Length: 151
Image (tube, rainbow, N blue to C red; front, top):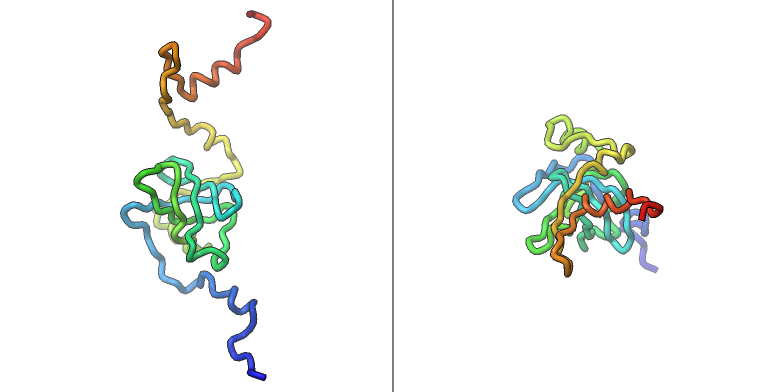
């Protein structure tokens, strides 16, 4: 029998992020973000620090090697053709996260208080309907306040 010199399955899983790795900053076409929700199928909902929510895919090189959880700080690679989607390029460790906050590169956001995210409104003008009106998100919220007894 051949002697196992490389270790078992568990030793291969621990080859993720090391605390001693150099701190990588974002480049052109990238943005810092914080994970809001895990959607499954290697997709995450990420709040990017430019003020938009994006649905991001985990890069193939990171799958099953780097585990990403809620409230982790990541670098999102933006897509030219889809602004609402992106790809996760890198995950920061806790010590790197504290360093970025101390350098004031990223803000400290408490995602337990989700009311701040609900206040952020992105106005999207959709296609006009047959009567020529344009609907935005703020116009649709007024429909909920209509009392049916008044009609």
